[in-house]
Image (cartoon, rainbow, N blue to C red; front, side, top):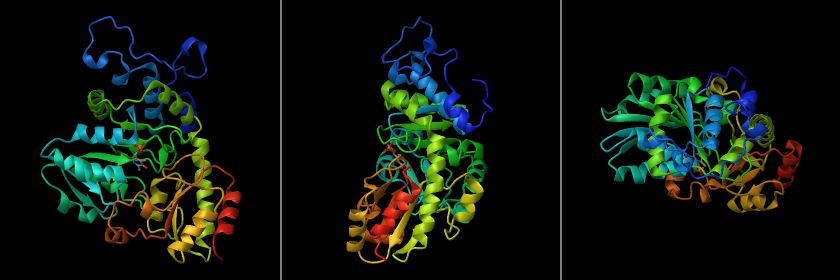
Length: 385
Ligand SMILES: *Cc1c(COP(=O)(O)O)cnc(C)c1O
């Protein structure tokens, strides 16, 4: 593919599309065919078969994903966890060690602390905001440095520039889960990361109607991960490819609106007497605001806040709001609320949760694309004055 110098809004529509279009179709058709004719002379990974991630729907989508983050290459996978687990297994084998940030997405946390040790792969947690503490965790067997662009649920932003520098200096593969920021706000390959992962279930698809993942990065690493994916089988089916492709086209419109709306909502909550604390990297009061401002083009649609009062007050608030749905996940067009203590972080002990700053009254919000004023009025009515 020739290098696409267009801006991201244009790439979302144009990049990777077949030229000429298939039978002139403006929307990429679904190739609902498990296999394609071949004429010999090719290796296993070149056989054209859905699980080998090389049907026309996979190829177009991969090229678009690579283009929007300015990566050399990309892959789609059957879920965000399929992307992350396959990526880690492609880079690590028995006897290896990885450094991971101390606040990980729940599925990744369990993979690293439960599944990888069974395969002889060890880890150490690090504070992504404190580069001076990293050297002491480094071993001769360390192969991977893994972080997330915005942490859940306190919206922390690590020193991502130092992560890339440290990984380069010590010959580690730098990997980042870029789900929370989306390529509109941050493009890890531009910052020098080897691999960027996404749960496309979230912002990239944006319509809360599929599960998918992506790996974007250097040609060499994406190639290695593709071979692992071909074997492990976490492939995305062509119909889901089509839906993701369709959802991607409006990513820029959605995320820019979510950036704007979340900042207004965070500012409103921050000034409300019934709210003790708001965690949003776009607020100057957030501890990582300066880093977020330096790294990102927007602060995203995710925020969390702590209410004054008891658990019963939070419960009443969650029951009273009318626009937000009470549901897990994030990144879609609908505004969603969750209470991390009983959802994403329910597996942690009370003590560990408290130590991580996740109180029982913390509420997480994924801002959708409804009217910002309607959301603020709704929240205002539900908050005890
Ligand atoms: C949801 C999520 C994942 C996992 O993605 P799935 O598509 O559910 O497998 C990984 N990382 C982050 C940050 C997520 O929010």
